[in-house]
Image (tube, rainbow, N blue to C red; front, top):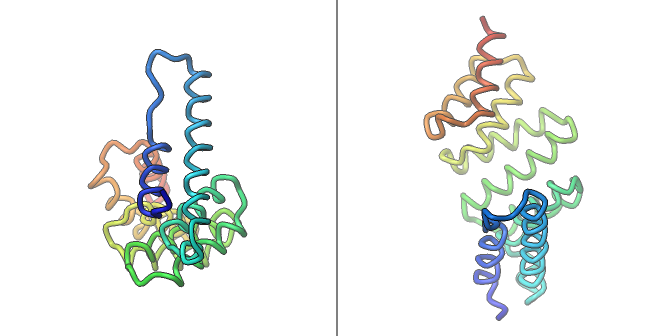
Amino acid sequence: PDNVDALMGLAILEMNADPPEDLTEDQKEDVRERAVASALKLIERAYNASPENKNNAMVLNHLANHFIIRGELDKAYTLAFLAYQNTEVKKMRAESCFHIARTHHMKGQFEQAHKYYEYATLYWPEYLLPQIGLGQTLIHQHKLSEAIACLDKVLKVHPTSYEVRKMLGCVCARSG
């Protein structure tokens, strides 16, 4: 009942469950909100199950993501930084760096965001989400050809990504 991996797995399944198709949009949104609330309870349970779980990078990264979504950037930063400090697993560190970068990015601290997006890609080169953020910070630095290269990496794996295609189109238009 207090296995952190099991609780986190259940939370992830809960968050990613699709509502039934026969519901109205309002009903679907209500189902999604309840699923997120239920998942958060499972994550909280994992976090509180034992003292060592308060340093579990997987739990801390999920909480950091939650607080980013809620706009509580200082909490998110603290949790992501703690996650980074408490793991040697490169992919986990990459995720922590990504969350740290996002907090800086949302605060308009583009140099710091750039640095942590870069760290994330160094720890886990195949992790595409930091490539998008890195591309955005490169655009901010007017390094358009480097930004194009980052966004191209994402499109090679997700060629139909509307958001990335739109960004890439804007950058290409700006670069001539």
